Every structure is written in C-alpha cells, then in structure tokens.
Length: 243
Image (cartoon, rainbow, N blue to C red; front, side):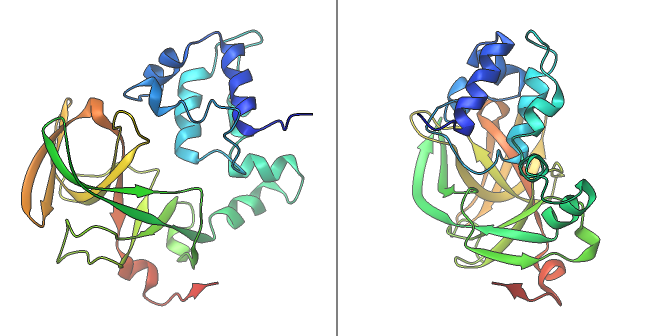
C-alpha cells in the first residue's frame, strides 16, 4: 500500500478546496505556482509542514471546499499539530517545548548569478535538515527563530563565511535591518540572498550588499519571504549550544 505522505494529504486538501495551484499561490502571496509545487507532490514527506508555508496555505484555503476547509485542517500538518495528534503532551507544554530551542540549518553557496538583470551571490537553504541546536533565551520564547551558517561573502566584513546568523520567520523586517531574502527563480527551487533592507515600497524592495557594495531593487513579485536577522550576541551571549 503506498505511503500516505504529507504531500498526498495536501493534494487531497487542494482537491477538496476546488482551487487550482495558481489560485492557491496567488491567495497565499506566492509569485508563481512553481513556488508551491513541491509541497503538493506525493514525494513530499517531511515530518511536518514549515510554519511559514502553513500560514500562507491557511490564508489561501480556509473557507473553500465542501465541507469548508478549517484552519485546523492545515494546522494539523505543522510541528505543533504533529505532536498534538499523537497525544505526546498537553498543548501548552508542546508550545514551550517547540520554542525552547533554535534549529540551525545547512546552507550552500550557489555562486554569483544574474536574474532579471539582478546580480546576486545566491545560496540554498535547507530548513528541513537540522545540523545543530541552540538553547533559546527566555525573552525570545514565543518568537520563531532559526539559524544557518553564512556561506556567502556578499556581506563581508559584517558577516563572515562560516559565521552563524539567526533569523526570525514570523516578523517582517524593517528598513535598515539585515535580512535573509527568499527569491523565486525559474527552473529551480527558491534561493536565498543575504543583505540589508535599505528601502521598500509597495512594488519593490532595495537590497544593500557590501562585497561588492551594491544597491539592488527587487520587484516584490520575485520575493517569497524576507526574514530579519536577529542579533547573535543576544542569542549566544550566555547560552551554550546543545548537541
């Protein structure tokens, strides 16, 4: 009997909604259906759905279908829903456990590429793999923070290759903050770039990189997500990494 994967479950939810992948992508704020394609595939089978993706699918799917899709129909695929469904612990304990540490994900340098006239040192980031874990300071308890290793030289000397950076996935960045920006590139999965948000409007954002120093305007239609960088000193000041 074929395995009932997370992707298969999402496909059934899509069919129930009556929406096309294009409808879902547009309602969820994605630049194109290809941004979502891998999630709605029978081969997609991580333990849980990333929180940022779940939030966008909730925005796109809730209220559609017969019976109407509810928020909890998507929530059950998140990390919290995964544990709740298995009755491992009460919800409040799960919430604390879920947010008690910071996962560090691997990133890989893809090199300089020109896309839509924009030149970036792109990186690939795998948020489904954890290579290290950090204790989270109590003041950050209910904020969704992740970490990765810098694999680009585009922000030297501010960020050095091999350095760990922490980024927040549930808070929008403000102008002047360092960010990890996620871009949709045709014919491949999403890619990331590191820089500083120097300006933003309803139609574009301006990314400032230091090495070489450039100010690049990026149309919002190319942007999947923008994550503000969190101070490593605040996170690591007195907290040691766990295994």
